[in-house]
Length: 73
Image (cartoon, rainbow, N blue to C red):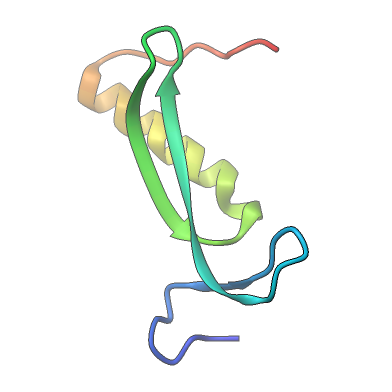
């Protein structure tokens, strides 16, 4: 489905709620310092989250000249 007013949104449903068009926000957080270092808005499609994370990591490396470390459970 394509929204007639906002074609960038995605048709989605979460947690037994009604289906609607929406967006998702992904945050890249420096947990050691409790700081949000980047945000990536996107249509609400969970399968796009990996690409969104890659984009945030690339921007963060270029902008701040440091590389992210993998967090462990």
